[in-house]
Amino acid sequence: MTVERKPVAYGDLRGWIAALEAAGELHRVTSEVDWNIELGTVLRLAQGAGTGPALLFDNIKDYGANARCGKIFGGGLASYRRVAMMLGLSPDTHPRELVKIGRSILTGTIPPRIVDTGPVKQNIVTGDAIDLWDFPSPFWNKVDGGRYLLTYGGVVTKDPTTNVMNVGIYRGMVASRDQIPILLWRAQNIGQHMTAWEQAGHTRMPVAVAIGWEPTLGFCGGAPIAKGTCEYDVMGAIRGAPVDLVKCETVDIYVPATAEIVIEGYIDFDPSTYVMEGPFAEFTGYVAGDRSPKPTIKVTAITHRNDPILRGTIEGSLPGSFSENAICSSIMRAATAWNVLDRAGVPGITDVWCPPVHAGINLLIRMKQSYRGQAKQAANAIWGSSAAHVRYKHITVVDDDIDIHDYAAVDWAIAYRVNAGEDDVIIMPSTFGAGLDPSTRRRDRNAALFGTGKWNRLLIDATINLDYDPDPDLGGARFPPTVWPATDELEAVSKRWDEYGLPGTVKKP
Image 1 (spheres, one colour):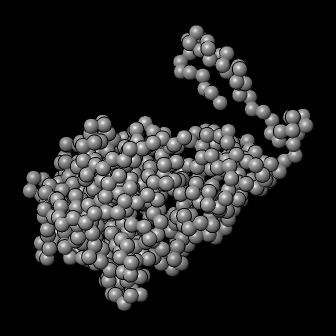
Image 2 (cartoon, helix red, strand yellow; image 1 turned 120 degrees about the vertical axis):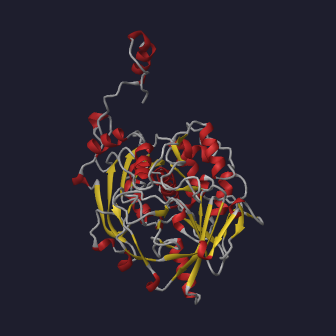
Image 3 (spheres, one colour; image 1 turned 135 degrees about the vertical axis):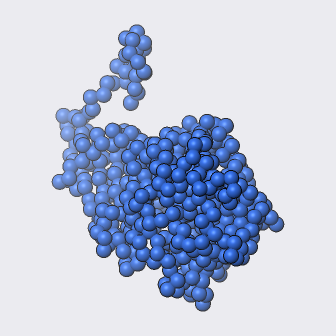
């Protein structure tokens, strides 16, 4: 049974930081740290395989006492313990339970509440006073094309017809004192909004970026929220209270009243206004997104709290260093895939998981087989859904006796239950896919030319093959029994385990 959660409203980023500190999940870096490469390197090394603390840097080179902003917070959601805290659960909640909750967490809604003002209005910067270099945007990685201010901010746009807002996360580089080119695709919600504004006869689109708020901002901004649903409504449901919003100064967009920093502006549709952006160390763990002209936010105002905290993240998940995006994606992409399987009517699904090291590119499915070809049905259901646009490149399906959170168990199933000559390995060629994947030919990663990337997808059916004939010598089974001790044998040994003087306990099947 899924554990019960108790929603928590932390109020703002500072409330979240205080909660993390009280739980022993925060480390303050008081030594001077250089925004140029060093800070990003520290954050990447410190996060570990979902085991490191959240970090608050409050002594950043060149951004001392008189700076407009001199603090950076990162790693807030780079562990399952902290994701559980955000969801109102015990920090020790197993990721399996987080996935189960993730199946419904994005469908709840509590509408936001409009308020007159809030701490984010303590400082209002317009005109010639606008200077993005006032903020300690890190040069996160040596391979980056510049300093990236937008790595974990909520980019807010709205549909010009329905006025429904969308909050998404997109990378944005500082190009000048008032220009932020960002990477976006027309298939994304922000791109669909751009198209809608163009079709309505406009030459530009209003936009605002909220940087630094409760953890639900980044979590929902990077999650697959249903089209037509505003992320603010979902944030309200997760935290159990409405999000207080204030109207921006120069655009008709609403942002959290207790955000740390808000950047307002417009994106012009004319390609001649685009500014060079990229490359960037992307979620794949490789540099991606070539340097090229990108749609650009022309900043018209900045509002911020006194002594604001810049919220950022180090992107790119690698073995031994799991990014916030990867941790959150492993939960939400698994939950989304499970819902797709249910809607498609695939029976017998008992667990779904996306290991965090690759942010949901590989999908693991655990099922109770009842008929031949069930694993292939599951893969086709996933690949035929819009949720698979930039995820689920490779799918592995195992039987219900395999724990998909134990990769040794999955690897064992692949070793002894897969026969490539028996249709256990299936390639689905030339489908849509992520344009940032370095394993795809450079030409086929050109989203500007083709609208998306191209993937050849793979199914590894590591279930016991029901196409094999039952063996009378095995009592009608298709596979021989495993060598694991019987239940009565385990119980007998378990009773004497302490007597043997061996560490640990007896592992049960």
